[in-house]
Image 1 (cartoon, rainbow, N blue to C red):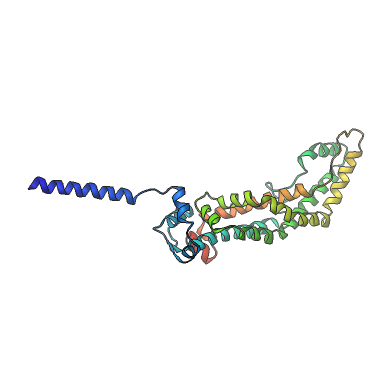
Image 2: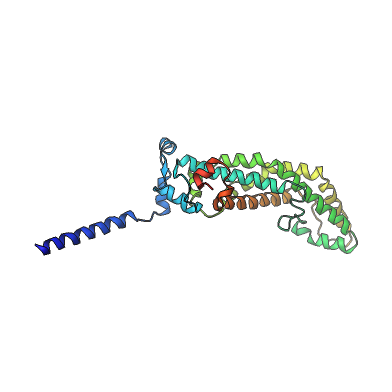
Length: 272
C-alpha cells in the first residue's frame, strides 16, 4: 500500500515538472511574429497582456516593468511610430540652429571627398579664406534645410505597417531607426533635395563653392576638372545626420523613462 502511494506521488511530481517545463517554453521570433499578425479586428480590440508573448517582448526590450501591460497591438505599433516621430522632432531641433552642423565635431560638413585635392591646392596658394567661407555657408545651408525635413520624415513613418512596427519591438536600442533608414533613405533624399538646393542658394553656399571650384579648374596644374554641384552631397550628409540623431533619441526613449513624455509611450514602454 505504501509503495502504491509513493508511486502515485512520483507520477504526480513528474507530471507537474513536465507541465512546468511547457509553461516555461521560450518563444522563437517566428512565434512572436505569428502572434502579432492577427486579423485587424482582433489586433485592434484585444489587449496584449504583459503575460502574453507581445507583452513579455515589449517589457524585455524596454527594460521596464512599470507599464500597464494592457495595450493592443495597434497601440504597441503606434508607440514605435511615436518614438520615431519624437526622435525626428528632437533631432531636427538639435540640428536646425546656428552651429547645429558647423559647430559639431560629429556633423560638420566638410568639402566632398573628391575635393580634398582642391582644398589642399587652394590653401597652398593663399585662398584658404575662400575655402573656409564655402565650408561655413555649406553648413549654414544644412542647418537651414533640416527645418523642412519634419513633414517628409513624419509622412514616411506613417507609411510603416502595424506588422513592421510590431517586429521592431523585438529589436535593439535603435532598430526602428535602422529599419526606417533602410526603407526610406532614397525616397527621403529625393524629397529633401529641393529644400537643400534652396538653402544652398539662400546662404550663398552654391556661389562660394562654385567660385573655389572654378578657380581650381582654371589652374594650369589641374588635370581632372571638378564638378561644382553640391546638392546631392549635402543632402546625403544632412539625412545621415538626422538619422543618427533619431537613433539616439529612440535609444533614449527605450532606456530612459523620463524621455517617455506622452501617455502612449508610457503605456507601451512603461511610465517614469
